[in-house]
Length: 342
Image 1 (cartoon, rainbow, N blue to C red):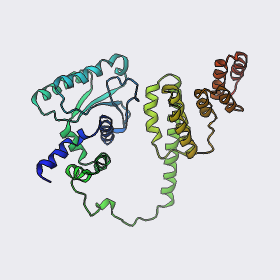
Image 2 (cartoon, helix red, strand yellow):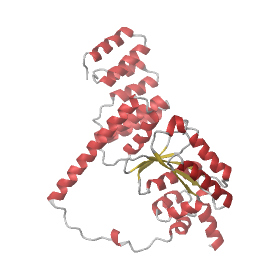
Image 3 (tube, rainbow, N blue to C red):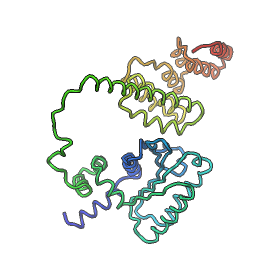
Image 4 (cartoon, rainbow, N blue to C red):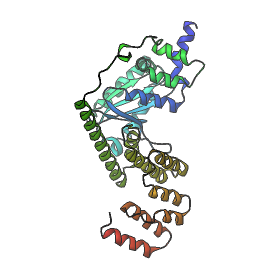
């Protein structure tokens, strides 16, 4: 391939992605930043995003970082200013007390033109007045960041099987046939008993922390902090160290959120089915009752709740009874829960 052809593929790789794929790539890159603990897409289709696409949580828990992703062939000074205007348009109502440390702007085209650079400096000063760093990555910066993240390039280049290898080699270089030293097979001594005990303790501590984190999410959901819960839940769900019972509980909770926020019954069913595959013994009475209710079968919803004595199930049952006009039965349940049901 000619030098011109190689440059064309390399320089336009980001523009070959659709906007959602570009956003996902930027999320994956931001996750690799040393200061970042986790990063997620902010919001789901149909929800307002309040001037950002990405939200990231810092490892030292001293605040958050946010990002906006623009897969555009051209992005001028007024576009840069517009991104910042939209963000600060939500400052008082959404972001002023969130502890934002840095705003990232990811752009798929070049911003090397002098007028664009001047506008970046202007907006950097604007953010500085709020104690926020403003960091802009254009196509050249993104390519430089991707060079050391071969797995990300491979993931997104796979969308274009005919030129996948060309894209990967152009950005990351050709893979060595010899594995780096740290990946070569080196005999390891068997771990001693003290190490295994320490590992078990660390695992238990991690699980306890994640259980407490999930309970906090439940409380925040009841307080109406929907968007924050959705973002946090996505990260929790990806934790491979979760025990099966907790993972199933997380999946059922997410299914309930989808029913209440998007009315997506099929997706809720898929999540509940996934939870059953993870832990067949987890009690799904409440989520199956909710699904039945949203499918227009309140009688089945009540039947599924028979024998359930936890407070959330009893409240759900009371709500369904009220919808059916069976107020006396609902009041009896309310009195029962106030008398000390778990």
